[in-house]
Image (tube, rainbow over the protein chains, first blue to last red):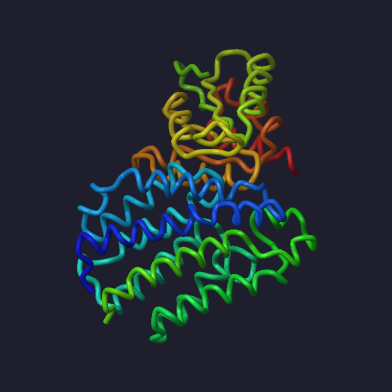
Length: 204
Length: 133
């Protein structure tokens, strides 16, 4: 897969738009079981990413992803900055400049591993890993953009009945049950935006 | 916000609230005095409640001591952001910064007390964490 400059910029804008447009929804999910700042935090982070355009898209894909990750780490605040930022940074570190689909699968695997380490968490604890892990399983087994996005959205829905045992929502114990995890929702939105933007690029 | 002049272990206080971080630092100053390098940081980059990596890095820098730096944190994101900040330090500094698993106010006072006596980083961390035991 080769992403030219225009495609890289389109990808960045799609990711940012998904967070900015859904900021209120994410915040209201977070008000239910967190501290109510997730939407605002992600919006602030991705607005900071947008502010690094057009230079950001001049970078190679790996360098661009690392730069996005660093901006998110520095600007998002809250635990999601280091978690989502680590995902982008590690993805960038693991990718060659012209990745094949297999390279992308392997890099996403490494990036998810780094998120697990950063959060000292695994899937099943009502966190963004409950979207990243199943979406990655579909990606790794050959699923197309539509299948990956659909799994990510369904996986976010599946966090609703889960009991949070990691992250701020774990303070609520059983009261965390019945609310979608905001970090899972933002992860599914980002994945949906990414695969929709990349669908134009004939991932092969 | 800080001073750094000694070989004592530096103390960094990280809270979601700048008022809590500053207040905890005031308590350390009053109870332990000025011998220990001390810095605090709190709030997100917009000044709301939260923590941010850049602020934590600045605080570590402000209290940097060859004896090391102990960080006291409040809730989850403060810890995650502190760990991220430690990883972003130069390699030779990383091993000399620890995040303590201790309550932020009590831990800061105990860690600073231990540091003021010239104790090692490991001893400072242990004392702060014993508060939970």
